[in-house]
Length: 348
Image: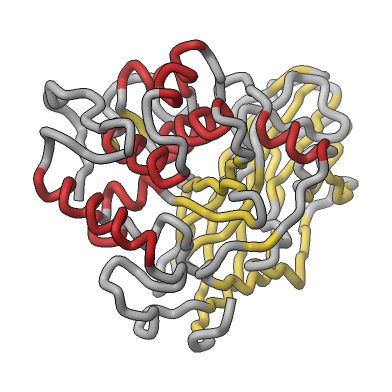
């Protein structure tokens, strides 16, 4: 595990050549990256050990109960709350959604990434707003690329620069300095980034900060990957969600996890680089695979929610977003309880 909460950074900041090979750094990590590179010749459903995924559950069913809450200043006339929902995906099926609130609500969808959210409208809101929700989520592991055809509009969306997913001269210089392959970009982010939440500014998914500091959490890792991919014209997209435990959790406040997908010309392929960095034995697995221990709550960056007055959201977290009298409000908190049922090794 490579989780750092302080200390000096290695002298060799990048440590990777034009072919995506690791040099002059942690020898354990160097071996792991070499194993990952050799495994490109193996089928997508094979982890770094070279053995099929038979012992790890590839299908889980979650029963979720979560509550979102936000404070509202006294005397506010109107509040609108958008609540993130588990998203319907090929690998994730959502059913039995229930929303418990005394205020009017509806489900809406953002126009770019088609995230479905609950929008609650509160006239003369109380000083503390809370909404309770329930849902059932069936989740499969992703063990192979997802075939897809992109339209011109989709390609433009997935290669665009965004507020913090930049395609600057520095990003282009780095992207052009490594091999033009998705694995080389994956390896570069692994070599450059350290999972470290001690340096202020982490967690916003700011590519320029990631280039300069080389420290952060999952948002920072995957923003850098998106920028490097888009700088070479490769469509890529960010997903935000929550990692789960097989034993479930009760009243967990906060928490999130994100990962990314790139388009290889015929299919979408997932990567989870921060997990690979913290679990070196799974570096090959997390290039092209996702486990079933996660729930997707949103997709994309610079998200425009229907009816919002403020600027696009950097990303939609697993809680939500609130506006009060037409202005962005305080952070929305989320408390999550879930149980897990494993239903064997279902196909993807």
